Amino acid sequence: MEKKDIGVGVIGVGMGSGMFALNTDDSTRMEVRGMCGTTVEKLEVLGKQHEIPYYTTDYKELVKRKDIDIVGVYSPDHLHYEHCKAALEAGKHVICTKPLTNNLEHAKELVDLVRKTGLKFLVGQTMRYDPQMVAAKQFYDRGNAGRIIFAEAHYVHDMRPVFEFTPWRLTVPQDLTYGGVCHPVDILRWFLGDIEEIHAYGNKGGLTPSSGIIDNFILNMKFVDGTIARALGIYGVIEPPEPMMKVSIYGSKMNLLATYSDNMGGELRMIWDDIEYQPTSVMKFPPERGIDVYGHTKAILRYMKHLEECILEDIEPSPGVVDGAKTISAGHAAARSIREGGVADVFNDF
Image (cartoon, rainbow, N blue to C red; front, side):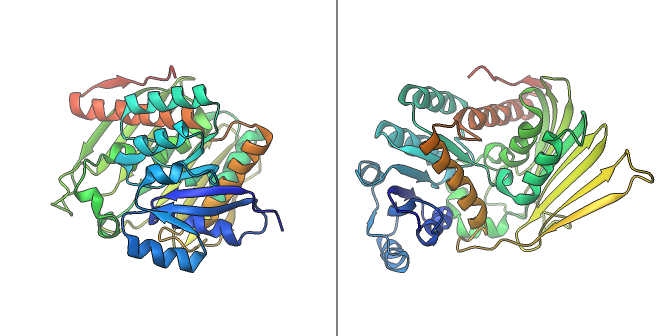
């Protein structure tokens, strides 16, 4: 068993509940030693259940604790900036769930602050840590797919149940251009690099009238290397008849299609062009349920172990703060295209 000598504090114990699995994982030196939430009664129950000795409703008190080395930010999207900033200014490494922020200027500030402090900063994009997505990237990195000709990714999700257990989304400024579309945009950036320009459309599904937000998006993108791609963020719909998340890579040698669904697990399909009859290979991945309400505990453990390695070996996290900021910049450009019409340039000079 590894010595538990890296302390973790969690801000936001709903989405951040998957972090509690660190305390029973013998392969990591990390353990959750403190947490911050809005309800004392809930914190008391979680503290006893997971043997977490400290809890508070004041995040400023949590980030100041000397026994905490890493702060996990799992608070509502509009609070990420102030919570990440406070943690960095207190000298803590940070894991921030997606999206990094919901504001491009705040994203720029966090990039500057990470560079100034030299601390490690990881953005929790779980798609990059789902095994079928990782397998697709491995095939691509080995050159099996060849040159990418076209790519597309989607995140389709009936948001009505999500609004029920995250009611803040109905009471605070909520922009799914950042909070939802960041999933397919980030996974495409993982394969293709920086985005040069975006043309986007958005509309309101109207299934949750009280939200009043745009919740369906189409983004057409041109990347810096000239590759074109499409991202779909579809949330204002009834339960979709296809996997929640998907990325399709159309290569000059092989096509890759990786999917993920909370309850069904995932799969990776490969269509080989250099084998007679262009056969399709299918790899199945079982569901990964965990203690958190979103079922992403396994992915959280994977990226936390990556962050641990980055801290111990002085490696740059992936996706780091710059990656997170560039995804926010893409969301900013998409929002501008929807609002003003036409093609919007994407800022990448972080």
